[in-house]
Length: 111
Image (tube, rainbow, N blue to C red; front, side):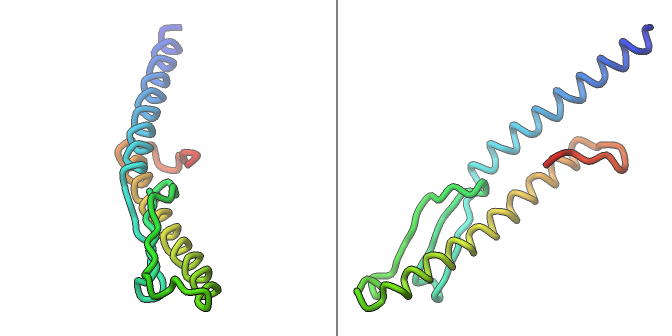
């Protein structure tokens, strides 16, 4: 009976540690900022590693009615570039969490 209690206590401690690491990682992801570029830097989108757009910068040369379609395409491309970088930053942060927890071989976390 004591073995079961000890195992349950150890499982709870492991769960608490995983939750703590995940919360820390989520805060870090909010703080990590990436920049997506398109059009050779004419359009820039800054976003967090969680994908929240923090800002958009558009070169003034694109602010003419005749450049509307190009601008729309460049904004979409810059966002997609930022999203790829945000995903990579998030994956790196989650890799650090998985490594710090030191789970048994083959054990996978749902993130």
